Length: 372
Ligand SMILES: *Cc1c(COP(=O)(O)O)cnc(C)c1O
Image 1 (cartoon, protein in one colour):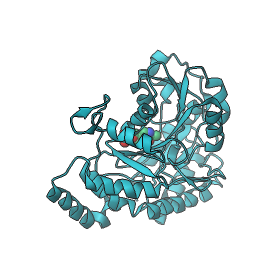
Image 2 (cartoon, helix red, strand yellow; image 1 turned 180 degrees about the horizontal axis):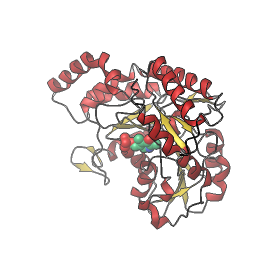
Image 3 (cartoon, helix red, strand yellow; image 1 turned 90 degrees about the horizontal axis):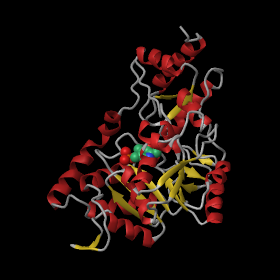
Image 4 (cartoon, protein in one colour; image 1 turned 180 degrees about the vertical axis):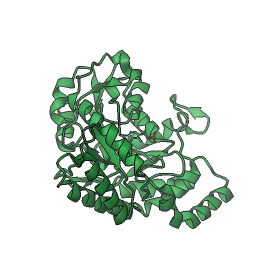
């Protein structure tokens, strides 16, 4: 049996007719960069996130970058985030001219450890960017409380958490700005590159609308230096279609995760993901932790099971950030989980037979003791 890590073809097959109609409408409208197709998607996505405003952008990386810029983050500022994330979170901070300052993550939820914030605070700290990793929100209440006490802005990197909840609040809606990616493999993915921010602040939404369009609110009248970060209209039109299926997809992911986790409870060598009591996890990634991860992965792939590692090198140890001067051992939880994480197949169209085959194969492999 073959089990792909992700099967976008299966996900898109029932929607192809709708995509074709929507793309034809964009072609006939002649409006390809922003415009009504993007505006309609923004309205629907804001409602989905229980936020007042959404602003469509070209990618999730641009979303984090423009969110920070709109909040006034710039050279000389420090922004606290986690090393256990995709590079883009820190990259966006660096692109504002600010310095990423890392705090470690909780060893059970893999999201920002609120207790670690106090140690990272300096007089230059301007913002905190928690990451809702793998589809589970960070523990936002203590993070928001700390930020309010110290006058800091909070920006949620929600790129992996479309529809996730924290105490009945939606990912992205709890802070100044929530940032989303619609990279094709995300829970809500475009048919290309796209991203968005959501916010309840009209002022911040307007600032980001200006920044995404070369700093102009009125054509050819540029009030600030911006960039071209507009959302492609074809992506907006297709995302509006896919958004209607997101809740069902997330529910299926949760069902699949429950099946995996129930089985792995019996397997001592596997640590399965924990859904915190405050969270509704949407399992963008279903990552287990095992010893000898690389060997386990080789064996699973040998049996036709697609796997991933998110992420093998924590951001503070990336070569691109040697200038920050972090040593191995600086963030022990992030470093340990980077060695142990193994992402198993997870997408709505997975079948029970496929999940059971993955469970069987993982169980066999780790129980046999893989150290050759
Ligand atoms: C995917 C992702 C991003 C970047 O999104 P792009 O659309 O690929 O630019 C940022 N942060 C996290 C946590 C992500 O997973």
